[in-house]
Length: 352
Image (cartoon, rainbow, N blue to C red; front, side):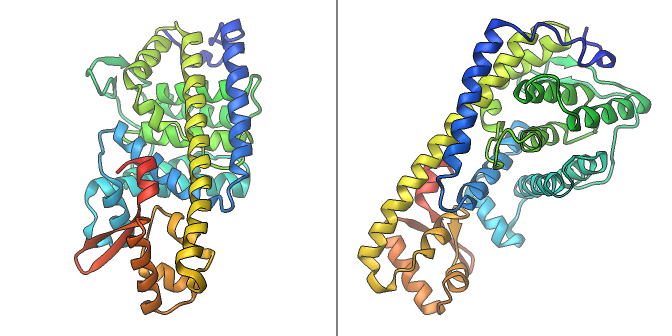
């Protein structure tokens, strides 16, 4: 069985030809992702879309399911928010809190991780302080492993995790993030929110080690699509075997996420250029280049965003919105007395 006390020295067989080949391929895609992100005229277009998708996908792994339409509504009309939307938006807020901590002080402290988990679950329980927790496969219900049980052990390994997180790794950061993800899962320091907290820590680590320039490499979508394989690797690792296979799986997940995001960037760049030309032709003097950002920056928009962003009247904003609906750029969603306008292209990229 895997002994947390010996981490990371008991992780062996990492300098294999298979891992080296996969590392070489993955690094190329990470570099391509960083280059592609620089091509976006406004990176916020991608940051907002991807962070919301990450929040939705990561929550789905915990069987918290909702739709983007409902999330857009929850962002704008809180009184219509259900528990599922609240939990997803809590995740997004926790992600932003973590990014803020990394960017402001350059490290991730124990208190920052506790704050991330607190935002996710909406309570202040903190670290586990009583036994009884076991880790099960959400799909099959099979027990994968039993994490540390005593309050002393949980605290000890939790503080060890933050030390490993902040120190310079002896191996490539892309392999280190895979090992840290496994280590955090093994510790399972909280009563609730461990998986979601751990997946936020993935992106924070990659930002912290400057592997990526922007927080756009999210893994939850790809873990969600391979949950059975993911749990199989965690189980094998806990039995002290399958280290090479797990690292290759994790590198494949990173590579797939890079490919997916590069494709998103390419398509968004292409579409924004097409719409820029189309709107110039159709709106003529009424066209303002800032309109593109307002249509894309959140996946949806509202009249007040056009009014404020373009410094125009509500009547003019209504005319612009109507034109965008007629041109097939937006679709209107009525929510009681309110209206939200969904970007049809963003919806086609990330789903409903």
